[in-house]
Image (cartoon, rainbow, N blue to C red; front, side):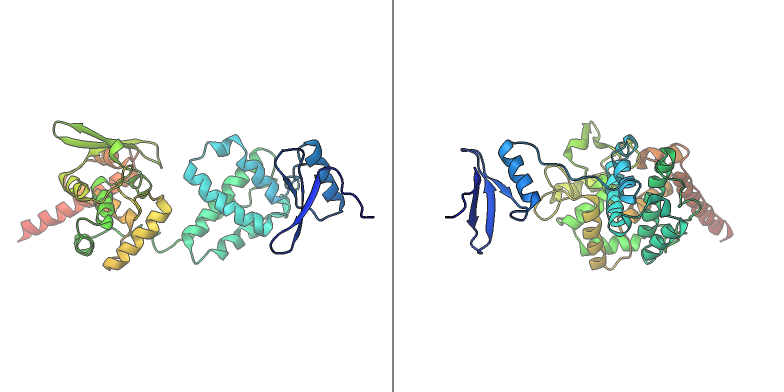
Length: 342
């Protein structure tokens, strides 16, 4: 005589012929049992399903391992104070670390370990430096809270890439004209380009800018937005040339810069898309270089350091604004010297 199934336990075959087991108590929803049939784990899951008891939660990372240290850090108060973009970037790095050395004891991570991680990314200097920065934050927190014996990142310097000395390429006026010729008014590429050039916003802020940030007054409109990186509020005029571009569109409902389906970009996907638009136009510049071009233009037109700080969201006494004003002043003096010697 066939053995009778335990109460509430049912089985059925899928269309692929696989036998599956589940529990159903009265008219309650079915609860699938995924453990192998007739094992200790199977009957424990069956009992929990019948009794309505919560399933035992999987144990966390083994104590004092790298995965354990990362878990503690990303659940700390200090972590919650970081900007969302910083958390996203570091999360991505920590997931890679967990896959490679998650089970390694924290005490075994030495300077050589960090150097090896940096060298694996040496062909991408920015990614290598982001890795070191993320690990430095993790271990400084770990040392401060007694979870790590040392900070193995101490003394490790960032790699120098092609932009280390000159920074991002600053667009020339010829390159600006070349991009605008390739992407005329009425294109999404032109909207993005003009928003970047004529507001001076970083790409993370430019992709957020929309009608909700506009303030009308007797002489036109201003935009006002709290910047992602520094948290400073930048308020500046919507220049007539930008107003004309926005009127031609296409623009979105919540953001001026949009994807083909009208939805907003995040800054990473925008950087990739805008980079393709730059390549199509045959220019070497990228989004941040337009911010530099805008600052150079403003300085050439006589903007002071304080005005540049207000326009571009730099802190008072910023080194960035001083660079642009010094460069502009030198250019003016050089032109005057040529005129005087003619």
